[in-house]
Image 1: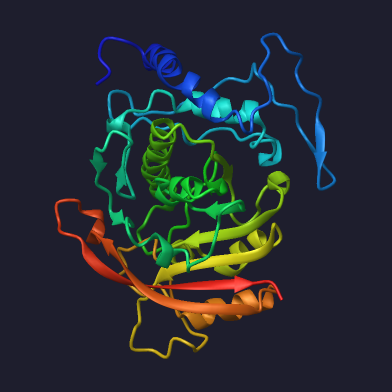
Image 2: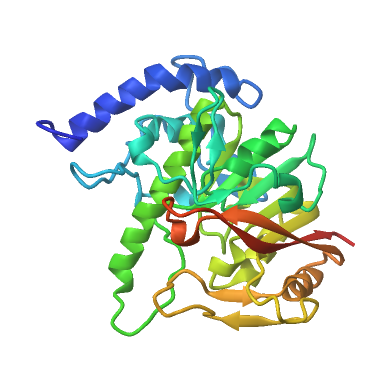
Length: 348
């Protein structure tokens, strides 16, 4: 708890502690993607990506940390984004993002996924994908491939795929963007979005906590999934892991990712209406009770296939499986088997 000091002082000290504890390991683990960082090196000139000028990373740019005083978790959202959300995969920008989360400890985290640390300690999360990874990924081989993971949450799949030889870049909501929330009468969306940013920030804290624990080389960018930064580059594979049901406009999100993918898109989501013909092109709007503000859709695999075919990914395979989940993210409850589907779509 923060006592007797200003929040600014607390953050400065926490960043210093985190830097001593985590950044030396981070720099080692990022050696595959980092150019040598020479003290006093001149600020790099702007570059161009996809015809758009990418602003040079400014090492003097302030860190924006917005917290709730003595409360936990401490999260850095909302914050001012880089211009056009560009330049986030630059090595120095990745180090800055890590520095902004260097204060993170377990009290600052909300673990969406269960994870086993290198020490053997297991951290419980709402979803436990251990042992079900191959089914979740639709059996797609990822070794030596570049993967764009949309909505990585706590990053269990990020670090699993990395351990299998993939070069992983995550993309998540952040900066000045919040998740999509369903409106309802009497529901103040402005404050609700702020609360949602705090929750999502704690989940993203857990990504950075695991990133540090695993000495990961995975990178991450933040922004608007309906307008991905043009400088993300090209990927062999994109993964949508149980996020389409939470998006107001799933087709636009898929089309944005498709513009960056040369080979395959994997979509895994909840099988919410098992009584329906899953090959049919069907979607239900707001399928749950009114208080569920983040569940926009129930969709069949057929609907996902139909969308991906329109985007040029016409060779599709559908599989069904179950993953362990604690309902309502209540970790005091036993995990139940949740029915899911995976669509693997290839170009052509």
